[in-house]
Image (cartoon, rainbow, N blue to C red; front, side):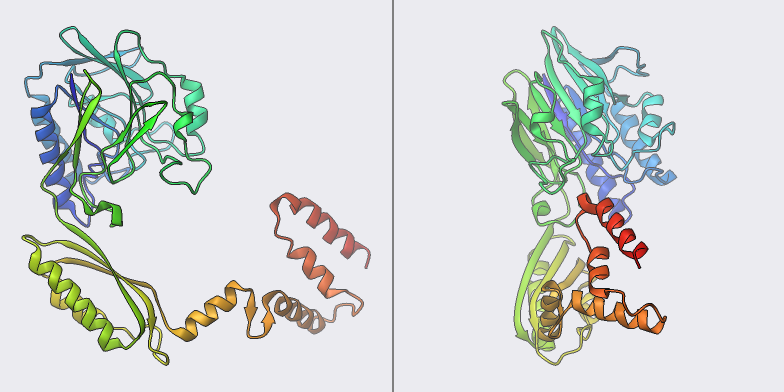
Length: 401
């Protein structure tokens, strides 16, 4: 059986709303032709409470898909009800997550019989004798996902090809939060693990089996990894092979321009040259993010770089975003470095704080016998594990006065 994985459509994304609709429609229509079934690992909508226009777009797309003559059919396993047997299965993503007891926008499409919401449940797709079981876990807060998996304890079904579908940040791909789920935390025994949420394609392994992320069908994050074509993944369950199917998506370029002690005219000229080259090569209006990095000429004022003329000149031919957060002035860079070293001038910040505190206590006529430096050290204790001890010591110190 062939399963198409189409993710993170973000219908209603305001900045590129037309792209979101057009590219989602193209991806899903192509998937419906090439595959026996479609699974969507979250974020069909961009907002928890999408505008009527976005809901209308989703209805327009999924109504046509649900009317197609599918060879395969889907049914729910367990207590949850499906209002169609059309083999289009989806889970809500983090953008669609609502508070407890509130319905999300995805459920509206399920109630209308345009797809099947399989969050926290299992559905089986049948095509003749071949059966594929899919367990879905909708996007939830990262600190709850491991606990939720223990609670649900999803199991593969014997005699079927089993897919685990979810929508979360994964630690191996984003190693900066210990709450993120790891490959080893995923339930064992499934033939394929499919995640949404991350907007560039990923091909990896979990428990020795394929772990796939198709990426989004529309650009929303402007990250370097998203410069490739958008698309979806087509999986063949017979041999667990897969391929990435590209769609016609707006081109995105992320460029970095480095400067050293550069004048304003030089920076502007380099920006213009880079933008002109990209626009000349592009058949349609591209999206361009320009990163300005390095240092400006000494003596220039922060904020003196006026980029409005460039944006006006090229704004009709490209969607442009210019990030100058890493372009600094030498004097400012030195000040930032001093702050990193906890110094202002020749005086450490800690000493400056104690000095300021001492001046304020004198101003308020506090007892001169107070050891200001000791009190400041107690209040400045940073370790979370020593928090209560710090408070207790500070109180003892004050009570002894």
